Image 1 (spheres, rainbow, N blue to C red):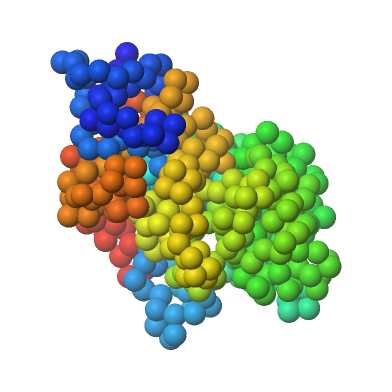
Image 2 (cartoon, rainbow, N blue to C red):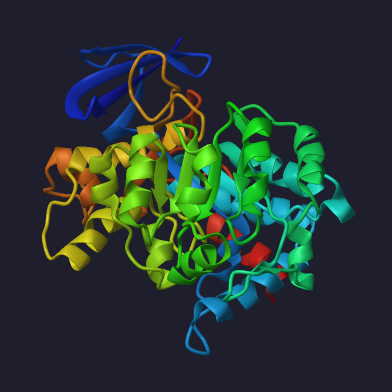
Length: 431
């Protein structure tokens, strides 16, 4: 058994002093309190359950700090995203994703849901998929590969389907059958697992959703949903239904709607009644000027919330959970939209569950994934322990444990200078 001793840890939402955590084969087998022992690995500061990044596009990290010219619109951002995708090969994707996942670990994330659509299967088979999975293993992060179905180029203003543009061809398997064949041939690695995703109602005909639900039964399924008003307008024009209404065959505890920025009252009801999850990505939603989704309303309706970094313009789980609260303050004019415990649950247990893992909690039977945060930095000094995650930043993470093994120690990743590694790999993708 490996044992960790925390000066303080969050257990069932309560900050508890002097906590010993025992683990065997990466699973927590004992949680107790008492003084530190010689055999214990000491985790300083406040120990949180592992933090979940529920939605990431790793290669978008190459765009950080490069997309604000020409007004910095969504469309100028998308053109640069296509340019980055066009330059990636399995080898360069592995290098870039390895560095991005190392950055996530340094920020305190212990698991990531990689919403992966850069397949280029006609050229590489499953090599691009294998590269992302290998990158996660290389960096040491737990991952669910959300293998994404992407079949068409979008919808017109009148709701008609658009063919794939040349720059989108790399994202598509050509058909649901083609996706299913490639999906079935993907091999996972230790600490990774395979999930599924539909890019959006813009990229997949909803008549395929029933068959997709059958193919993916029992797996976590994610989809971009109602990110922008135009998406809703196109969906209503094409089918007379909102994206959430179209996704009804897939709704349930295994389904996560990503963004959910522009939801109707009936959408909220459907997501709540089905106990689906909605993954907000506050730093991306503000960067792309998407808007602010109805997080507290969804939670009250019975839906779960998780958090993601999406385009990785920011990699900081504390900024995401703060954004969930702060964005709602701006649109509602009131504070305290969520309790600190609710924000932490979104960042931990519900994020893990939406990715198909039993983690994000310090309890017997849960995965031994832990994030230790300094309580004495210039940001956290003086903060109440039960609100520390509202004061902290990624720079306050000192130790990260994944599957019972220390991956980040003393705020250092085994790669060494992750910043230099990021700079080198991004220069190769977007010189």
